[in-house]
Image (cartoon, rainbow over the protein chains, first blue to last red):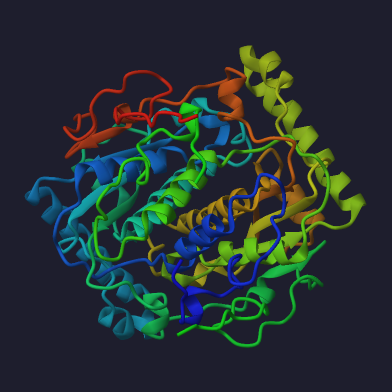
Length: 260
Length: 260
């Protein structure tokens, strides 16, 4: 597999950089493990697209990957709506634009910085899909009696599967959540109880961001992983996670050296 | 890469079964794409573990994969708490057991069937981790003004990254959500505003389930993908997704033939 030179694309020693013994007999090959980590580290939340198309076969693979996500009590709460009518896409774009302005105002002192960001690619992406939680979810109690929002967690896992598969296929994905869910539900004639959770822009891109776009634009930066890991109680440092050496280093593992 | 004979492990024609042209110039190699799909299709929500240990290096790779998930406004809401004290693990197990009984009662006519299922491996897995949403999330407005639960969606993407990386490493993961979040938060001294969302059992397994355990146990079965996909409006069938040919077939794409 190709070697990455950018630190954010390869924050750990990948399994095939130096041979790492498989953790168990069920481990995939070093090349396969490397491909999985590469996909995870090079996936980006894309807002810039280059038009084009996505072949139906590719789209079916992406949705099949999504449908093989875990779901609480195997409830499979996800529904996927393709937006192929231009007028409907334009209406959704108008709703996002409304919410973009309202979000900017709510941000106060960061309003101007936010308004300078490109936060969606609804009119540029080859494909626009709406992901929603199905109606009738209240009958699913397994794993949700005390945590009803596990249905959203399941659908998010489905979107992450799609996102990773798309990256491996060379396609960008952007998850836009700047919208009024009531308005989007009405626009798509969703039944009572169904809830839109994502507008997914999917398609070819000019290039994948080298690092998360919001980091490149200095909106936020990746936190050191060690600051997010505790042991046996909140705030108790874990001996397994040493302090990070800098904001771009996700952990203190040695970086893989780029090879020329 | 190995060829899978079980339909649920390979519901689509993988990119390397027959050469499929890359969708874009940024597509990974056919072998890499195959590894990503293999991981997605062979990942399982595990409840049976074989004890053992997980090496700290492996655990750091899994957490680094989680930390490279997308997050709304790049807020990185996830926190990870390792449970290394046996007494704490036992207390968490007791909370899950309480909720298991309450869930069974809430299920009514399915109470007995539920009580026969193995729904958690808290005492058997090599590692037990609690995943929580951080406190102070209310200051993050980007992408959350109308959809505040996008923080949970982000953390679910992080868990899915960890889950897929673990499968490639040959390790099982089970997401247990059978618990009272207030009691778990208190047990781990979480600050006000932080919320536990997952007890993750992680570790070696005797074998990965051939199909989702809840399907094997006839609790639920996978829905045909075509029934979950619409176009331009709820309930409107999509021409790209033909009716499925059976409950185990995620879509109508040709199955890869097992080779001997």
